[in-house]
Image 1: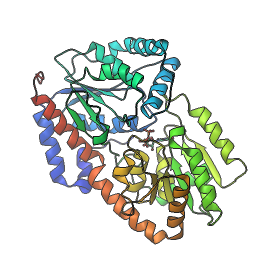
Image 2: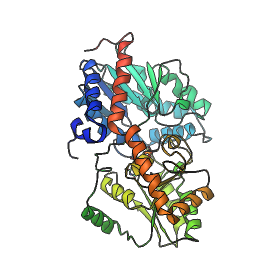
Image 3: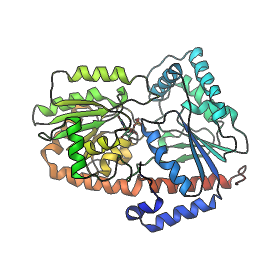
Image 4: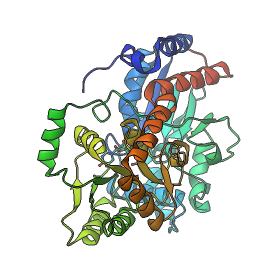
Amino acid sequence: MATVNLADYAPLVGQSMLDEIKALGEKLGGASIQHINSTAVGGGVAEILARLVPLMGEAGLKSEWTVMEGTPPFFQVTKTFHNAFHGVKVDVTPDMLETYREANRQNYNKVDTGANFVVVHDQQPLGLTEVMNQQQKWIWYCHIDPVDVDHRVWRFLGSFAGKCHAAIYHLPEYAKGLGLPEYLLPPAIDPLSEKNREVTAEEKAQVLERLGILLDKPIVLQVSRFDRLKDPVGVIQAYKMVKKITPCQLILAGGGAADDPEGAQVLAEVREASEGDPDIHILDLPPTANLEINVLQRVAAVVVQKSLREGFGLTVTEAMWKARPVVAAAVGGIKKQVLHEQTGLLAHSVEGAAWSIYRILNNPAYGEVLAKAGREHVRKNFILPVYLRTWLGLLNAMGQSEGYSGC
Ligand code: UDP
């Protein structure tokens, strides 16, 4: 990955924002921050940390990223918890709670007890709050929609989250009322990463050839982990409706995340649902396939994100940044990104998604208007320098409160 410096973002956000970032970074006086999550690749959190951590370093913090380790039974438990956050009915047994606690105990030694700030991303490493010391400020960063979390799961995980000094959510309506300062910080994409940078015509052609994709029919694309909550089978159903009235092809591009054990099973369901249609391309991509995803998003006529639940939906942000028209489910953070009929189209059902896809395929000029506004919406709100600035403001606010001794 090419090294990126803060100065490289000046053409996108202006020098004044970079100056603000530097000033906020300096005010933190060389504080140290440790980010902890549960996977190095796959999914939105790993994507953000890979880019945020070095830039926090450039802004003057001592910034480190630690991935906790876990066994397959632990990830099975945390996947169950993840589903429970999204309102899925789950069984919770004492054994599961003990598997969770034990995996976290095995990771206690990964906590940097000297770091001024420790940020626990999502629920997997929340058990590490057991080893916090009171010289530190711990932050729980919830990247998913916790509104309908199963009460038994929340009673267990909320007790860990409640020990933190602050919590961060993507949307105001996600706040759990933990009795802590609760902040709002939606995530962001890095416009200069391999996944989002401009690509040459030659790179485009090479990737398409490698993936076996022809541009002979308009492409309807969804990029997502193979997860039922991303509703890949619903996308196939919507595509089949559209295909009856206008020619198109469907690409479902995805892969697994190390902390998601259900991917293979969902992929098998998706293959079954697409059997017999040569215009459906299921691409099981490795986590390193950033250029491939970049190119697919750029050549798509419509990018779909038909999630049933969504924390934020970075795939939507990525597509909008590339000025592609988006049809997305009106769930979670997608609603902040896709302003209906302005920056994209929202859908509420398979039929609604099909209708919106059809509208864009049938009226590409309208799609381009939405896409152009979408890119500007992302530039103003959801790109890395904007995100970094908010992060630094938040750390300054926390640093000024009692208990932080600086460095
Ligand atoms: N992603 C990827 N490869 C895949 C599937 C997804 O690199 O096979 C990336 C995708 O481009 C996006 C992130 O993983 O950057 C997914 O983030 P999102 O918020 O959409 O969903 P999550 O997976 O976190 O639920």
